Length: 586
Image (cartoon, rainbow, N blue to C red; front, side, top):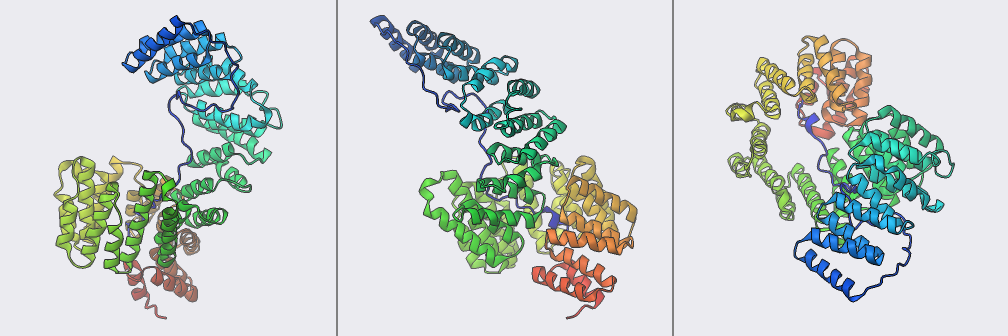
């Protein structure tokens, strides 16, 4: 079995962020609803003007406490909203939360009808985690919102309370404030969405599911509901995906589709993810992130020509509007595209083209990725010593970087079939590295290549003991036992544990199908393997499925899968061994 298959992930996909949530009260925050401030009389006599000048001098010279006191006193004397605002601003900038609250409350007391003053009181109370005191300012905030703006405003309120430290108190306060909205047809969907998000944030999973069902029944597409769906799916809650699919029925931001696609990729539902990416491109053909993700997914599925088209399309779109993109966004995305194009050229054995694409990567953050690929290209050309020198020259400033460098060098040796050298490299590693689960896992796979099956099992059990949620170790040990037709009941339990830790993983499902085959449950094995292959077309899965079908007498279908496996990866060891053992020809 290619144990490294399960370790391949699309972890470098460049995706648009779901939403930027502020973690602290900001003095520059734009109000959720624009309400004109009442004009206040400002009797500025010479004494007051001198006081304001002195306040600004103190502020500029790094004396915020004095500046704050002067501005607040001036605000009270002049009853001026701008001066109150300045006092609050200075307190927030100096992280004096209690002082900021004092100024905001003084402002609200002096100008009770000021929405901005009330809003500052609310935000500062949340920032200070004085949630029980937010009910009245929250009610005041809600009372001033026009019906046409209410759904949007409720979503804004959810964002504010999601960052509260006391999450359970936040749920209680907001639910009390939204009692009327939860019963009013025009606002029910938005209000229940807020409640569901806050309950989920507080760890009340059943309560969140219940509120989400209310949202589903109302069948309204809103930004808040789409975000709720993503949050639920991230925690594997059942109502999450139905809510997402309902939201996508309407016209939605393609960024939401992309976020959904990312979750599908994490669940290794590649076909479903590809469908959402395609839909995002159909909806907005110049959506750069969708082209980049599509190219990465096509590369993972070994669809090299299609991947190249998608990645070049992404680069042309970015180049066309590079001036409007932030430097980090442009740099990260283009670097990934060039790295993927280099991978395509490498797999085609066009090493000169691969090196050419790598020359385009000028992002310093990608130096390790670039150098690793350069080393791999040299190794593929038989220049293993030069390749190892490149890897050995990578940064090793801390234990993580040292471990990465060690594993990369071992991978070079393994791919060059220098299994003993790779095994010794890991065995002689420092004590700290030698007990690292990733290093032990890699060493176990090399022990299997060397026929040291007892040592492989010892290392894998050590990994499981150190890191009980390391699903790849359970899967590798279970598959190894099944493949040798040993302790099949134990092998099945190990694989089922791996699948419990990584639900839907097609490579682990492949192992489960294989152990069912060894147990004599051929029909069940075929069912599991076909589902795994549909989720992730892979040469090894196809080889296993072909053998099961062959044993069931379905030789024509078996040959079809063997042919597909050959197209995917003709050099796969399991495929080659299976074809030879079964004397398959076409």
